[in-house]
Length: 181
Image 1 (cartoon, rainbow, N blue to C red):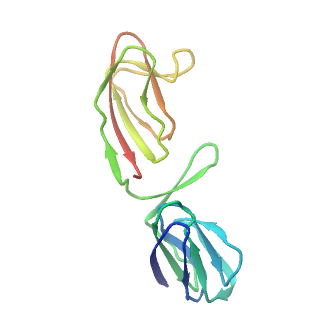
Image 2: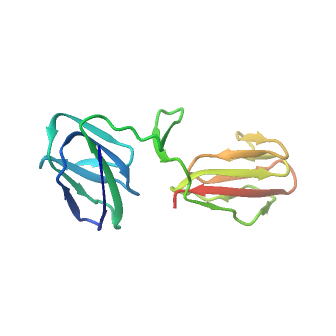
Image 3: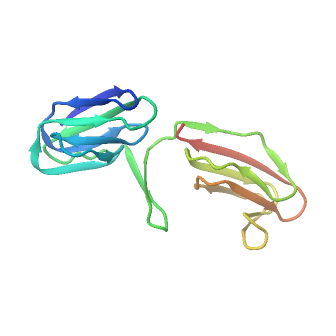
């Protein structure tokens, strides 16, 4: 197995003279495309792998993102497994692939809310948020939301906004948000 790491400008490509039957995306902040032996480009990203029945001798990496990115691939004659990757599956069957550690965390100023309030904005880079409330509050709506009891600490693993509705009076909300960037 050999590793190839390149910093590729937006819209630019890098040709890698490497032989093998297997290639795996080891690093890259965003999606990119690969072409094997001059064939058609295919979408690729960190954690994705491709195995070919016949050996190849050249790979072209095209950075399709709007920014420069560092891309690393592994090339081998046999499958390469990367235990730095963690897979998650939600109840809808979507699969997400994440590196094992968050890059950043944010602790916004605590909020005191008295009515329905979006306490956490939508964030496509969010991995998870830990929310602590001092009094009971509903998630999303009082009519059909989930009631979290007073003193609850819970995880919000969605990238969507989080709205809380206090059961009665004021609720103090503390948040720790973990993000990719």
